[in-house]
Each structure stands twice: as C-alpha cells, then as structure tokens.
Amino acid sequence: MTIDWNNYTPWLSLTGGLFIGLAAAMFLAFNGRIAGISGIIGGLLNPGRGDIAWRIAFMAGVVISPFVFVLAAPLPEVTIEAEYPMLITAGLLVGVGTRYGSGCTSGHGICGLSRRSPRSMAATVAFMVAGFVTVYVVRHLMG
Amino acid sequence: MKVLMAWLAGVLFGLGLILSGMTDPSKVLGFLDLAGAWDPSLAFVMGGALLVGSLTFPLIVKRSKSILGEAMRLPTATRIDRRLVLGGLTFGVGWGLAGYCPGPALASLAQGGIKPLLFFVAMLAGMALFELMEHMKNRSLTKPA
View 1 (cartoon, rainbow over the protein chains, first blue to last red):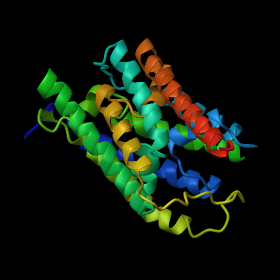
View 2: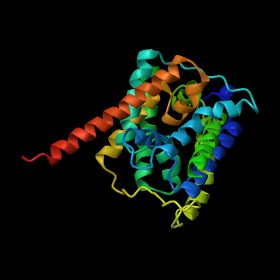
View 3: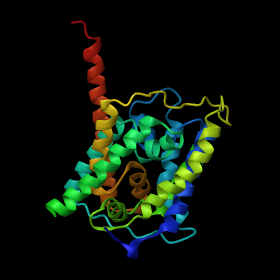
View 4: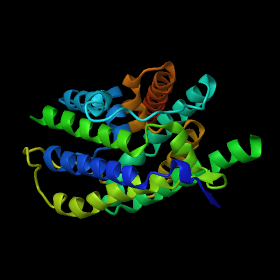
C-alpha cells in the first residue's frame, strides 16, 4: 500500500469531522432527530404532517454552507472525475440504495455508530466494502 | 425554533463537510482507492464525528423529550435484513462510482457546475423510484387475492 501524502489532510479532516459530529449531536438534542441526510431528503417525497418545514430548513442550511464557509476561507478546490452518464448512474444507485438501506454515511456511519446500533454497523460495513470494491474494479480492473 | 435549529444544524453540518474534504469527489475516491495512492484523510472525518457522537449520543438518547420539547425519534428497527444489506451495498457502488454521498452532493449544489446538480437530480429520481416500488408493493399486499 502506498500513501498519497500530497493530498493527506488529517487535521482539516478531523476538524471537519468534529463539526459534523457537533451538528448531529445538536440536531438530536434540540430536535430529537437523527441527522441522516438521505432520510431527510427522501422523507420529503412522502412527508407526514408538519414534516416538511424542518426538512427544507436543514437542507437549505447544508446548501448555503459554502456561502458561510467563504466568509472565513476560500472554498477547497474540487475535481469531479465522473462524466455525465456515470454521475446519473451513481446518483440513481445512491438514491435507491440509501432508501432501501434506511440511511447513508451520516445516518448509519455517524449517528448510528454513535449510538452503537448493530444495524448501522452492518450497513456501514456494506457500503464501505462496496465502495472499496467499486473503486478497485473501476480504477484497476477496467481502467 | 425547531425550524431554525434544523437550519443551524444544516449549516454546521455543511461547513464540516466542506472543511473535511468530503465535498471533493476526487478526495473521496482517493480514500476508497486502497490499491492505488491511498489518501487516508477521510478516516479522520469519521474519527472526529464519532468522537463527538459517541460521547454525546448516549447521554442525549436518555432524554424523554428533546430540549425544544419534541419527541425523541430514534430508529426502532433492530433486524439486520436483506433490505438493509442490499441497500447498503447498492449505495456503496454508487458512492464508489462518482465519489458523492447524499450530504456532500447537497453541499456542492450551490458551488456551481452541472455535475453536482445532475448527480443530485438522479439521486432524487432514485429515491422517488424507491417510493414508487414501496407503494406498488403495499398495494399488491392489500389487494384481495
């Protein structure tokens, strides 16, 4: 295994992780809900009563966060390697998969593991392994 | 108040995603590429989030109501079933193909470009497809034989 030291950002990533954990803890403490992004978005497609405003507010907060970020520092550069057909395929799989699996990286990976849920542990292992295998296949077997 | 707190939590969550590097799909793929030049940074995102989460969640979940007086809505399912595992695997394949999971896709929408938007719309379509399939399943279950 070789480590990509050029792009290695342990402190920034750790600090970002602390922010994410804090946001999830705050949301659970004040709103009594799990900060699972796929559930928050997906719940809008079949909302219950009084269930729409807070979902839109949370999503709006995430969407405008880059504008808050630039007040303190320039946005990090991003590179999107995937082309349009790949992005569409990936989006469909992420949409269907997160709803069938009842969660994504935030709901299972962060909130679920924080409350030591065996279900979330199983889901996290599943999507991590699938992610590793997919990148291996795309980059090293097909590429 | 509940809506304002949801918004604030969303902003803080998004700031964390940007700061951590999660909104850069090439960085995510660099983390998932164990056989290439591996960038372990994103393990620290989970480490940081779990550090805060595992210290605070066990205390918060003991509350009978949230600080704002809302019901505590925690997941009640406990069974590790086929839906959970197959759903997780499907999500993981999509994550590995583009390097976006739902949160970072949302945080990337306003940063411009058609690519995050395209991913996001496809993700919504996938979620709608799920709702449709659930709806059809429920209908066939309730239909008299």
